[in-house]
Length: 448
Ligand SMILES: Nc1nc2c(ncn2[C@@H]2O[C@H](COP(=O)(O)OP(=O)(O)O)[C@@H](O)[C@H]2O)c(=O)[nH]1
Ligand SMILES: [Mg+2]
Image 1 (cartoon, rainbow, N blue to C red):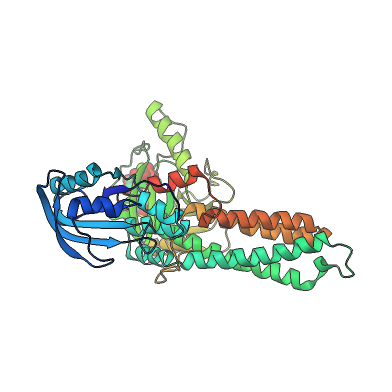
Image 2: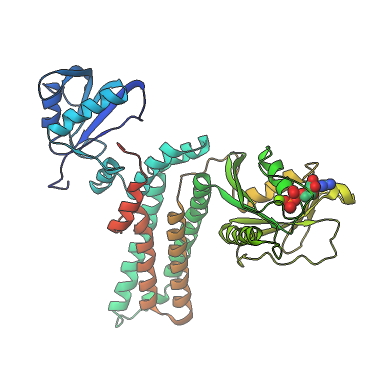
């Protein structure tokens, strides 16, 4: 346990009126401070009714007191919960009693930060606490719970164990080159590296799904004026979010809608038509469209099916690796059948935003891009930073293996393995910086 910490206090229930209001204390002085407020403390983990009193001995509230001495508490420190009546004034007065008795107001996420620093949770689990609280769908909540229970942490631990094992072997082989056998040439090593790469990649696939559940898929509708972008936006979101007219240049700003496809959260953006803008406002709109495209996970490039002979322009702002679908709209006017154009690159889909024809296929394509497996909850919740770290780890292992295969370069392999381990360590918090921790815990709520 970490020494020299002060004792923190916060209202842990949401602001406003409710059945109960909980003031939570954590730190070496939690027991003493609580005794100032409630008199005698109940035994560990047993709730007892007490009157809460201020420094003058006046009763402020009455409720249950729960005392959990460290290290067997959420934070790993001595903690006390004062469960009084849920009103902003009364909980404020109880908190004040605790502060006057020597506690300090907790920062957002400080309880969870202490849980992490005291080794009660790894960083991925601490983040899962916040993700559980913030989850916007049942799937996301279930996945966050599995992360909190350690499903993600356990996988990472296995990767790190295997990495350390291989590293030890490789470093020993480098240090004792005079041995008869070339240990680096052993096929066993190649197999282990391949198995590790495959395992990390599998975790990466699951992490992408988990991060998609948390952050959703960013989808941008782009294309020339009047092709039906806003009509499609309204169709997919099921409401008249965007103004639709037959006047080119109607949409001058980017519009956002949040929706779900089968539990997959989607952030949909409608953009101003991409063309040489007629005025200043439209020019800004086109710039924003370009920026939205650059940020997107998937881009729907809409074209009018009546003019298929015009070769569609490239979408400005799109990067090589981005998922792009060319969508021919208004097939109700051309009589073309809906559906995909097999083998085209980028893939082509024919729809009518007006009649809704072809939209199920469009949704399916987006789900496929997200790697979304409907009905499956995903084994754990994850964040973008986790996905990036896993990508880094997988790449480092792959690069190391390649260098070994090409030139028997043990030193380079060892360096790559070290890099992979560091990347994974950033997820669990084994490797962390104060900045990273501050950034993560600042997004938590007060009292958690
Ligand atoms: N017939 C037909 N008209 C459509 C379709 N989608 C959009 N439109 C019409 O095309 C015009 C331009 O649509 P709008 O959504 O504003 O296009 P945007 O400029 O790309 O946003 C409007 O008159 C729409 O009613 C479609 O699938 N079929
Ligand atoms: Mg529009």
